[in-house]
Amino acid sequence: MKFYLDTANIDEIREAKNWGILDGVTTNPSLVAKERKAFIPLIEEICDLVPEGDISAEVTATDFDGIVKEAHELAKLRKNIVVKVPLIKEGIKAVKVLSSEGIRINTTLCFSAVQALLAAKVGASYISPFVGRLDEAASDGMRLVRNIREIYDKSQYKTEILVAALRHPMHVLDAALAGAEVVTMPFGLLDKLFQHPMTDIGLKAFLKDWASVKRTE
Ligand code: E4P
Image (tube, rainbow, N blue to C red; front, side, top):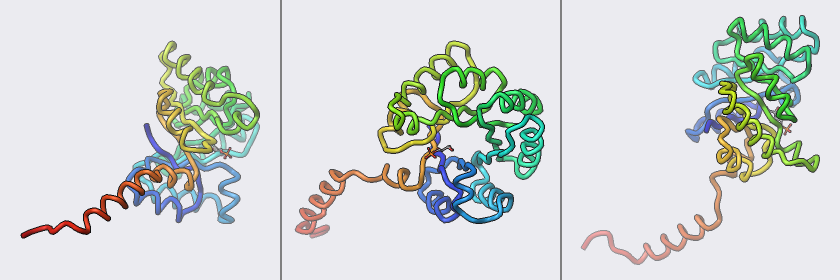
């Protein structure tokens, strides 16, 4: 399963890259706005920081022509760009055209398996179910992921499941168990995956006992 960082923050991406587990980056308009930087140069910088990984950058138009225009502008920036398009009717229409041109699309703001079905039918590269937002709305976000997995396997769709809006390490575990190809998560959650108190306690005990050992005669 691939680990993507859900951020537009250069320092977070640089740090996570050093951990050896970063496979890509997803951004969205809110994450970009937080950085208070010009959009295009920021996306280019992120693409150059992780040249071997997919970098999702989202369109903000909501009409067919505008989405297609923005997608063309984004796609030509770098070869590792994936264009994010929201799962609205105008977006689905645009994905049909864009995917036929070979532009890779991440269909985002997915909250139902039927939306995921539409995305696969028009050739999306990724589907992004927002599990944490569903959980927060008293729905079962991970059940959606399992349903999408079942539908895609039955129809042999190639669209990859990119589980989004993660809130805690159990979302990562459950996404892996559900057979998702990718999870995308905030920096703080990625960092949390390295932490277990029992490992720290065990290591401390080992080192305490080791202090009395002579390495050689
Ligand atoms: C994916 O890139 C989504 O935009 C992101 O995971 C949404 O997460 P949020 O619900 O924390 O905004």
